[in-house]
Image (tube, rainbow, N blue to C red; front, top):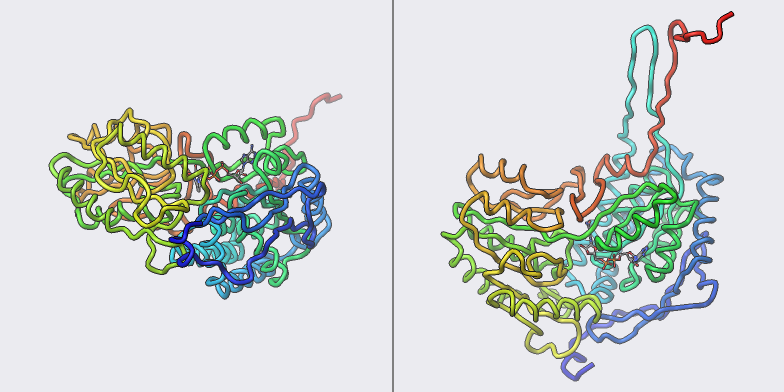
Length: 503
Ligand code: NAD
């Protein structure tokens, strides 16, 4: 750490120096005693050791979750009883939002105000599914005089939850809440870059009255702990959020077991700005869309396509505003872009910044911001005139870097928007009603925001197409993923029974 960063960096009080697994209601070390280093992204110094789980730890966690599922009360409780526990979890998360945000911001480098928003969203996820399960209705079909059929919805068993390091606590809640609400038991494998906030779940769950063994947590590397979870025969469900390449690997590894898979993967989402758009709103939204959460956001609008008549004005105003975005220490309330999560990721993002100099016209940023000689700080970086075959147009950078490209016709805009392997989100800016709908419906993206920033009602489906994912979560779709829908058929009238082998 240099003199420059020392006075301004912040270290939360009472930081743990070690993080252990949580299995069957107890904090435990790895069976083989192994640990891995966890760094903070401002100093890049190791501040704690986390237990490095492997097969034996995953086996113990799955056995605990399996026992809680087959013998424990959780899957058999009334929805209202489970709902009460989930609401208490939401209350506890809300009451600790400031501490959660402080730890999350320290561990991940996210700006504190944004980490606070994510902590509240995590509470909201629990509240939402607590409400949803008590309102849950299932299908019944009547065949008059003959048959009645109904759906018996059942929890599936042990859900394996594997999560990434961007907004870790919130993304964990996204899986934990529906998996638990529906009566499953879980093993969570959080991202190795950011295990700190995940270690708080155990205490929150215990206090809220979640029965022992329902929640289990194994820390560790993806290729060890994550892999063991994916390949475990007693884990019928894997919900994964992470990179598309990891998703592909997990898909293959889960195939021999025919597991239920939910895949929320990477993105390179377009923001398409037509000349008739409200330019002020479009610029504000597209700045926020790629620089919020440090640009480490799966739905980041990291390619901006702008119609030629407003292109020059857009680029000029966009670059000027990007230069004003405040990079700072994650704990400062005024910070808009903090530090990237890890030096490895910082190197990756910086390599794209260097590449961008050869693939586009640099109009803002382009390296470390002034005054931040150490730590994983990247200035909001804008490249204009980027060609569609450029790597910075095609590949997910996952940092505060954006590519801007002009277009002349709606057809060209659509071709550019769809001309990547990803299909997570799209943002469309136009005041032409017909075009807005036609374009939105034609764009290859799981989610479209029209004249809007990324604001999502929890009832709506979340998911990507193409290399961005498989399956949908959100609202009832999450309930569907985490449950089996058994169809029960009952004869009411005469038995319909063709007789074979009649004498
Ligand atoms: P990652 O794929 O490297 O890791 C994600 C998780 O998978 C981690 O917990 C990791 O330990 C684990 N893992 C790695 N290899 C594994 C293996 N072989 N078997 C089992 N588990 C394994 O992703 P990341 O770098 O942590 O996260 C960033 C990525 O996540 C970006 O691509 C981003 O777009 C994506 N993301 C997607 C969404 C979405 O909802 N679509 C949301 C957030 C992040």
